[in-house]
Length: 51
Image (cartoon, rainbow, N blue to C red; front, side):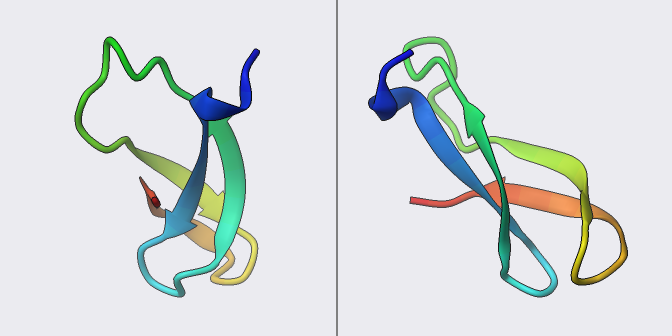
């Protein structure tokens, strides 16, 4: 898979980047938001796509 499809997911509370993911940018135009486990907050919180 190409590098232009790779996105970073940032925790909304502590602002640390903990996850990398792939996204089809032709199908999903808006920013991705997923509920993931943050190892710094030690809880499940929303993670938003960064630039």
